[in-house]
Image (cartoon, rainbow, N blue to C red; front, side):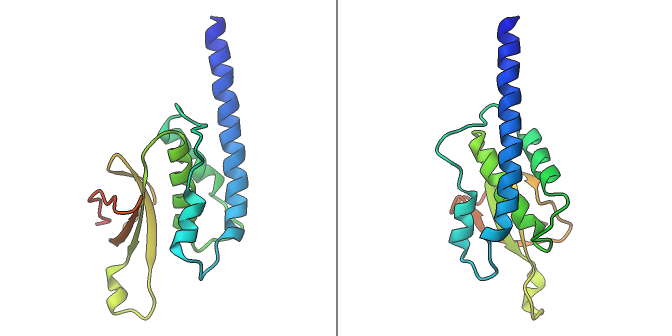
Length: 153
């Protein structure tokens, strides 16, 4: 019985640590990303640490925490998918999952003077964050070259 309560306390402490780190990273992220920043620099922000601090936490709970933390943004209001995607990718990877971060563009870009892009995260071939009704043509998947065949149609 004591083992269960110790294990439960450890999980609760890790959950609180995840929520706190997520909150801090979400606030800092808005200042780390600029409009003309290269994609490689943005992907560095999503790179998890070598330690897997959140191993064993359910993916659905991590995704829910990302959404909850970012639901009322003060900054980066016009780029919610990028914020959610970078943070969800990082924290899912730190929990030991193998997420994929996808980037796509609206096919109407050919006839439009401005591009509309989107970012989403998949886990086991299913979209876990960044769902969209608009079909996007995938142009990049991270880790590099790891396109799973998930299109946004």
